[in-house]
Image: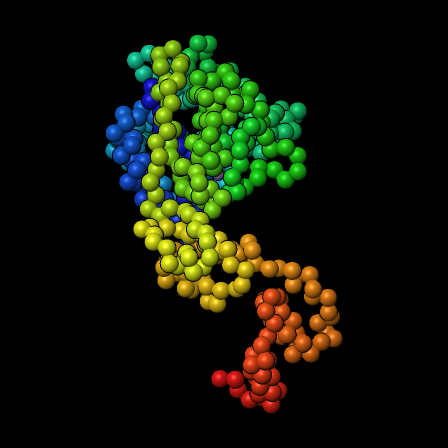
Length: 381
Ligand SMILES: [Mn+2]
């Protein structure tokens, strides 16, 4: 059985104030759907964080509706989806009992989970344990297991509950949204708990033929080849600029052995960091100027109107950083704002901006003239 494993779509995500929905649609429609069709996929698994927030924008819901319809109704491939920590379990579970016979298996609210989804191939059944993300307190209440206090215990309880319904010897795929210890985080995941540990041990997943994980945004295996994160649909932070995003294709043989391959997605806009002096960045050749760009400048002096100028070359420039910027002056603000004149404040500001280069005579003259004008109540324009 050939499974396509994807995760962390985060539909409706805002990236530096811009909705990424069109970029997400591009990858889903131009890359994921053809992949499902051309690679002879038997089942698609989405391991949580379908949406970026519990109340996603309408365009994001429409996109998911469209993609889910095309996978299940047009391509006739079963589609198994669990909710992640960004999703609303209740909203994701909407109509799940009606949709399951259509091949769309949505696991959100624990109360509505029915147990493993069983699909068949020539070698027999494969049982999919779908484990949506749930807080330990929710698991404790739902399963009536008072001892569940940690994410580890919650996962153990959920796996035990679903696993108990799988006959011995049947091939199994676990789909879960969790932080498995040993995995490497990026900077775009939201922590699962504040204080205390949010991690679960990989040993919990050892019994399964394959474990399709969501939550960590970098594609990776954790301790074993068959326990994997597919990674997010797109790069959702500049910290992920060097990652390759894509989908895992897992072939589960008749004996339960798994062959793995990773297929890259090619996004409409890449997320890239360009570095050098401002001048060098502006002068360099770049054949992908429409990418999402972070400019990391070597300059130590401020660049006048830098962002606007950068956007003439890179219309989708998102941010500019100046790690070498001299910030020594920040610690020098040891005066009391109430006790100094505006002129002194300005001089201090000028020093902070250009620590190595005090105001020239001509500049001081200019500033004095402006202050005189201001104090007389005249207009500077
Ligand atoms: Mn996520």
